[in-house]
Structures are given as structure tokens and as C-alpha cells.
Length: 426
Length: 84
Figure (spheres, each protein chain N blue to C red):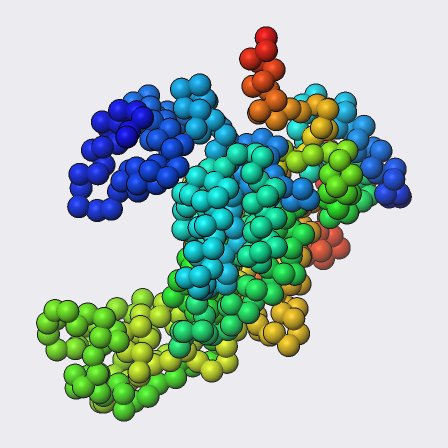
């Protein structure tokens, strides 16, 4: 029986798509506090302002992240959601879990929380919405001891690392993204659970340039699989695509007749750098011009494969638009070997170099991408000990001045002012 | 010359006591010992949290540190307001 009238929310149930309003109403049958969620959201729609306050000192002992305090600013009107904290649970690498594990987490949340979840949050965590302060410690105990699950990151912490399916299912994976994600999650437990930085810091791992976890747009440290030799071509399979014997895009567009496959129109002319052409029946690629857009490989997966010398490109500094607008990560390290045998030491070394610099130079609430923007990419590259290359340059410069650093000028900038004045008019 | 851990802890507590605002960013503690590495300051701040001398305050996106005596949680604040 609804506790509040919700005419505005009820409108959202009328469309053809699934509605969160219907879901919350269903959940309210066993968790009556959910009626108060609907009541408060209805009021927010009416007032056109949120009635949630967030932040505070809630958490579990020893952890500085994973729980986000949420409170209603109209608690007397909606007592069921007066305190309605969010719990973030670290997702398994590649988001693989059994139905039994999901059921156990849901049962635990039904016991200690509202039963409402968000699968998954932007960082990738399983997000459990709505519990009270006294329930946090018992929930945490059972989560860690009985279900062997840990809390994720929040606040100025390293956020829960996220990765694609990688080599577990994907033939294009250029490195084992799940192994790297799992290793770094364990290696940086302290940074995930206790605040260390000027602001949040996110790792995301995509095993190929298709970038299925959108690492380049959503993480401060994006590790994106790539190769540095030539795309592997099977010319017999190229011919099979041209002859229509193999469906393009792995048959993904077979629901409709798009006509005969046209390699010129569908592959060669769409190459962003124009680095492909046919010589008779042979497909040619000028590999040094390839920008790893993956289009040709996606269209003809049996004919084309990533090169054999594989690793990753590391891009730094993506962020959402809170300050200065959204920005993509900047390609910083063009090619890094991802090697489990050395405990990924090349990646770890780069991460820590960035952290040491950002912790020192970054302002409060400044993402690393904003710090780079503030000090300039040349300074960042120098700190990272990376030699600038043309691929670091986004566009030709519009500033006519050239700035030299002291060590780039023979004799430096030091001069004897008296000697100088002797030779120049006063 | 970097301070010893105990000296740094004392300086951080003093900073948290005298700061105009009760919540401090981790960077605010760096000036307690400019020679200390930021990571060491972070580790000491977290030790102080474990000892109960500092506590975390989180907005959800940013985490700050505060003296327990200078900050109240939302439940305590509401109860205090209601008893007025």
C-alpha cells in the first residue's frame, strides 16, 4: 500500500522500458523504507532540487573508504530514509561472479540494508543503496568473513580498479587485463582503503584498443592493450570476406540484408589514416600509419589480428566534467611491456612516479589530469622522464613564443649583470 | 631534517586542533614537516586514525581528517538540535 502519492514518478512507469519506480515499489513490499525513497524523490522532482545530503564520518573501523554517508534533509517527512548510506563492494576482475555469490550478496543486503542495488557504479563497484550506521559493522563483518568480499574505494582513495574480460574471452586481448587488475588491487590495498591523494584516482585496464571499459575517458591511469609490430593478415581469409563466404563483423549485422560486403567501402575508405589499400587480391597495410582504431580488425576478425609483439599504451588524466569540462586521458607512455613474471614492475614504477609527483604538486580536489593541464604536458613528461614524441602533440602550437629551460641553453641563464651593462647602452 | 614519527604526530594533532576549520585535507598536514615525503605524512595520518586521535570525514568524493572532538556525526548533530 503506497505511503505517499507519487504522480510524477508514476508517469515514469508508463513507457515501454523497465522503470526504477516499479522496481522500488516491488521492493517496498518487503522493505517499507522504500516507500520513503519514492516520497522523497517525488518531492525532489516537485522542488527541482535534491533532498539528499551526503558526506560525514560514517565508515567501518580501519577503512577510510567504501561507505558513503547519505542523509535526508527532510527526515521527519521521510523517516525511513533519514540515514541511507551507500556501500561500495569491490567487483571481481572482469565482473565474473556466480549466481550463488550474487544471491548471497543480495541476501546479506536484504538483511542489513534496503535491498536496493546499483549494478554497477561508474567505477565498477557493486553499489548497495541504503543502510543505517548501526548496520555497517555487522554487514562489513559478514561481507568479509562469510562472503570473502571487500569494500571498494571512495573519497580521496584509489578507486576500485576495473578491467575488461581480457584474455578470458577476447581474442584481441594484447595483455592479461584481469591479471594486472587483480595484482594491483592486492598491491595497493592501503591506497584503496585509506585516503592518500589530493582527490580520487582511478585505474582502468582495457586489453585492446577497442577499450571496452572506456579507460581512456574514465580513468586517471588507463592501460590500453596495443602491439608494436604489424597487424597479422591472413590473405586467404581476406578473400573469403570479399567473396561473401565469411560474414563481416563476426555476423553481428546478419539480422538484415546489407548487400554484398564491399571491402573498399566498409574497410579501406573508413581507415582514419588511409593506410590500407588493395593490390589485386592482396590487402596491404602501411603499419607505421596505423592508429589502432581497430575498425578493420573488428570488421574482418578472421582475416586481421593484432600484431604479435604485444603490450600496452598508458594514458594519464581522464576525468568527468566537474571542473573545466570532461577530458580524455593523454597518451603518455606509448608502449609498455605488461609482464606478470616481474610483478608488472614497469607499470608499478610508472604509477608510483605519477603518485609521488601528484601528491606533492596537485592541489586539493584536483584530478591528476587537471594538474597536468595546469603545469603543462612538457613539465609532466619531464617528471615522468619521457622523451616527447610527435604523438604527444595534440595540435600544432598557436603560441609563437618558444620557452627554453636553463639546461637547454648553452651557458644557462646565469649572467654577470655588470659585464652585460658594459657592453650595452644604459 | 625530517621530524621523528612521534614529533610529526604531535605537530599534526596541533595543526588539527588549531586549524580554523575542523576538517583538513591530507595536504594541509604536509606543512607540519616540509621535509617529510607525502606518503609518510599519509601513513602517519592513518596511524593517528587507527589510534583514534584523528578520524576520517568523507564527502563521498573527497576524504578529509578531523579531530573527533571537533566534529560531530549527523546523528549526534540532529539529536543535539532536537534537544534545543
